[in-house]
Every structure is written in structure tokens, then in C-alpha cells.
Image (cartoon, rainbow, N blue to C red; front, side):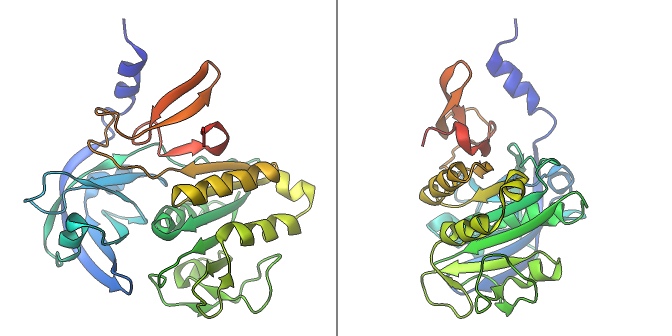
Length: 295
């Protein structure tokens, strides 16, 4: 007899690959942040918005690091990260032409709903990359109308420009945006407590609350929130979504050892029809319905 655990394992067969990834480019940003483009054809071909990769940062460090995918095109993907610890510091030193071992793509993706075409993407800090990936997917589908709120307490890993796109519920003076999302015609506003010019002075949830409050009941009913960031932020977004009765998916962040469901070291407590259960963030997630998480 096949057990539920075995069925979950079979679900991931043939979808996760190990391959040598070639670093194509490396860009450094203030705050010890880096964007690296890595050629890994199998991973790129099978990735979906919300997927992540498990990367060996250096041959001397056997433990891999989970990294959210920010962009995918052709045979490459991009990651954005802030150096924290020896592993990511060593990865940041690798120049174009270097080879890193890539395990991926891993995880359950975001699930846009055609019946809820208004897609509010909320990313905080290292939670920005999955929002960029999802925005890239949504912009190619005429059924969806994405907009984004991104927050950071260190310099944003891109040059801030003034947006020409309107954003409901936001003062005209708040115009700073991400150039890439602006070029995709996706209304985006930035938030921070650091006083960066043109940014909203507050949390992402403050600005999201303003936007949601500016919409009538019909528009809110046609809205779904997608979010990734630190756990306190995700909890606050989930509470905001519940208060406005808006659907919400969260991409959770957890420490991971194997990242393929074997060690069960990244479990999270969720509510199910059969009662509470532990789910693995790596393969059962990282994307979950915010309403089932036992915050």
C-alpha cells in the first residue's frame, strides 16, 4: 500500500534536478546585496513562480542554501540575496564563469485565480524576488491585473525611479518604484522606515491597508494577495487579508537542511479538514493559503 508520505514523494519525482550551474553575471548593491544570474537549463525550464533552488555556495561547505528565484528566462534564472554568514559570503565572491551545484526547482508555486484578477503582490526584504517572478508571469496573462508593494529597511537592490503609473489610495508624493516593474507597466510603490526619497514612511501592511480601503467591496472580492518576507510581516499581511476578507497566499521562509522533504526540519503547523498537522515548507510549500497557517 502506498502511504500519504510516499504519494507526496512521488509527486516531486522528475521535477527536481541536480545540475552544474554556470554563473553568468554578478551585480553588487548597497547593503551587501547581490544578484546573480545562473545558467541551469533543467531548473529554468521547470521553475514556476514561487519555486526556489538549493545551492552549494562553495565546495568547502557541504550544506546548501535555499534561494528564492527572482527571474527565469531561456536557460537561466536569477537570485537576489543579502550575505548573511559564511556560505552566502562565499557565493557572493564567485565571478562569472564559476560553477555552482544547483538542486531545483523545489516547492509548490503561487496559484493565481482567474476569478480574482486583482493581484496585490507584497514583498519584504529577501521576500522581494518571488514577487518579481510572479509579476513577470502575471503580466503575460490578460486575465490578471497585478500591482506590487515592496518594502526594505536597507537600500533597495535597484535604482529608485519616479513612477508614472497611478496607485489608488496613495499620495502623489509617494512615487518611488522599481524600474523593472515600471517597465512592465505594473503599478508599484515602495515602503521603508529609513526615509528613502519617494517611499512611503511605514510598513508594507500600512500601504496595503490604504489600497484595500480605497477599493469597493466588489473590487476587494476580486482581489487576491500574494506575499513573501519575514514571518512577522507575513503574519501581519495574513491578518490584514482576513480583516478585509481577501484571499491570501504566503510564501514561508524557514531554515532548511535537505530541502526535498526528507529531514522534516522545516515543518510548520497548519489547519486541515482532519485537524492540525505539520507540513514541510520545502515540498508541501513554500506557498500556503494564509488562512490555514497556525500563526
